[in-house]
Amino acid sequence: MSTVLVLAAHPDDELLGPGGTLARHVRDGDAVHAVVLTEGASSRYREGLAEDLAKSAQRSAQVLGLASLELWSLPDQRLDTLPLIDVVQQVETVVDALRPDLVYTHFPGDVNSDHGVVARAAWTACRPYVLPRLRRFAVFETPSSTEWAWSTDDAFTPSLYADVTRTLQVKLEAMSCYETELRDHPHPRSLRALQERAAYWGSRVGRPAAEPFQVLREMW
Image (cartoon, rainbow, N blue to C red; front, side):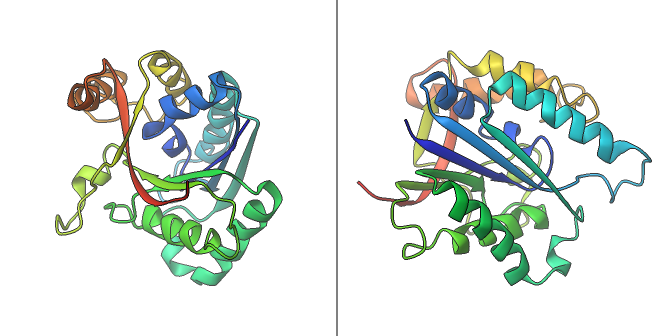
């Protein structure tokens, strides 16, 4: 059994990119832990949204079968106003406690600056002499963020594809728990678009459905 850790910036980010993969890890008997760093609501100024998102995250975690879920409530869309070392040290507490075998987090070049901060903090917290047993550190795309990045000079370049043919429906069911975050098709955060996206990535590797990752470090 492997210990898997996903570090996400906002509620539903833990699903949008790697949800089918996390469900597959659970199906295979791995312990999957998720940490969501921000409350995902304060930048939108709707009273009660943070509480709604927290409840949605808990329901979604149950659907996925996560071993644990932590919701930190750091300021939404303002992670770049915090000293990076403070974020790193918080991530290190989780890394030290779990000692994960695999870590998934955001692609650092996303249009959303919170994603970049989380990716940098995760990468720093998982440096080799701190976490020597780590087998894989991989970053995922986040629909409606990765493809909208300003620069294409360092674009998301998948090097690993997870076959999620058997777990895609679990991802979609878990995403359905986030009623406030779902959008109508053709928005990338619609259920139909997520299904079509998985089919697209699957078509690149000869599978009905897949999720892409860029591996930044792997030890065999």
